[in-house]
Image (cartoon, rainbow, N blue to C red):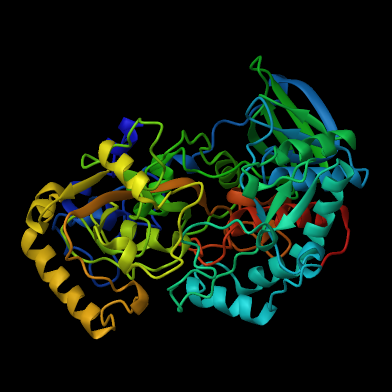
Length: 580
């Protein structure tokens, strides 16, 4: 944990950048996104060095895109076992399992290769629109509004508008199918609104929420056999249930057997996957109908992640990140194209002490009390950073794109309970916004307290001149009832004038990256000419063409929801089954 926090923006453990000292890592990455691995960057037209002159420093910079360099092909004489089947799914996780389960249910001969010793970890929910479980509870979503809202928030970056529609249209039949699977095992699913469970800063029905963001909380939770859900503190092992359902229908799982290479035939079709088992032996699986890459994200390969989004290097991994872009790499090795950018699945308010370290105390919550609410927020220079009432992941974005270190300070005073609007969020599994938790956070060193603002600023280590100027301007907005810089809801324009004063530093944590292999409306992986590679599909965090460099923070659960749905669509397409 400590190493992650100390290594804030390091890019190079393998000569990832040369010349970064001249331009800075961000400039080098941004300027050379199209350079071939190991090749010199060519100066743009009109900037060529004169004859006989040395090239500029910029044109000397190289990037070692080692992830694009294909290993030597594994020959047939190295294969210990060959298996013929209909479909191979690479990855027994959140995205791989729906495709494997559906294809097996339809009678296909399905084999699943999984790097780990068991199926992937279940997260909190899935997500969809106008499924039966929602409509039965009078929960409906407007297609036109959803698609245009997402397009506006993301600026259409990389995600085709048609991709949003494809997910919206197919999510209901997918969720309905998923419900039948779970009911057959004695479980069920339920919309988030029915349980009443919500994330503290999700913006849904929250007092003083930012009106700019049209928020979609279309999460669907899982119900155990006793009728308990996440609202009761129960999150069932639903990936295990999907894996069991797939196996019951004939799917074969090969655990501790990562996929390591893909094979294309002379026609260009992806026909085989080679895996390496626990004994170090190679197993070749020939797939007559298709191969689904659902191997997860690339957050475990920091250089690769940093190439596709340098801002993500300012995030901190709270848990060990194991996925290293295996599916993306295997695809690129046989000619597949990648997104230009990757997004991150981010949590914006992870509390750290003044040195940037997470406390080890068990009574600390992930988020410090009060600091995750829309209080006055500044970067480490003391400059105000954002409209603090942004919902969900939106607060992450300015912290990693507009600061030097990806962190910020929340500042408030001792009259916070009286000043905050009635009905402010009291907390959830990430936070607890109570005076009792505030005292715990002070004890654990993630919140600092001072009798004067001067003392507080000194403990924060920000520039006092900048901080005081920003706070004075903010207080003017509080008096006027209008935030002319960021247009935060006036309900949260509260002054900081009642001692003692509090501040808490927080960073952005990343659970995974979102972005990968470009694909078409049938989830088929595309080559560098934009044409589908026959037989090869991608879903989940291995797939691209849905996000840009920002996870749409107003659509909670979109990563899981669209990843699962597109896995299901992939299986249908391989089997020639119609879908919307």
